Image 1 (cartoon, rainbow, N blue to C red):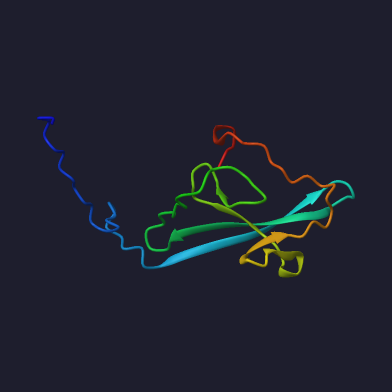
Image 2: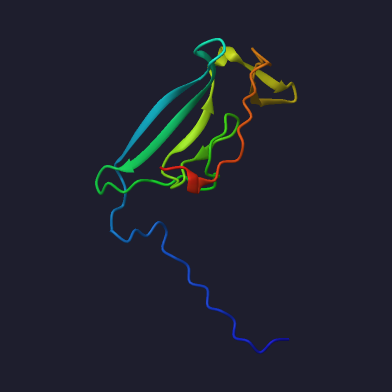
Length: 129
């Protein structure tokens, strides 16, 4: 048994903001990005939604938490500063269910298996954001 003092746990106030703004009014921006391949020229291979949210009253941007920074055509990620979520999206007509046992999981149908959408890991320090 240790004689070290037990550290005091201090619970922060829920969503305490140092500026005192309750962030009641927000503004969101969503850009839909068409990702194309050069062969054949300008063939759309994926879609992505870039989403940004800020407080209209104080201008403070919201940060998307719990997502890795980077770029992926398969899973959501954020810009290096976390202020933009990059979410893969697709028209419903381009999707199929992953399996009959998991109807909530959708996959992009392989319209062109020759196109490799694998994206290597990107170091956030190399991206300006």
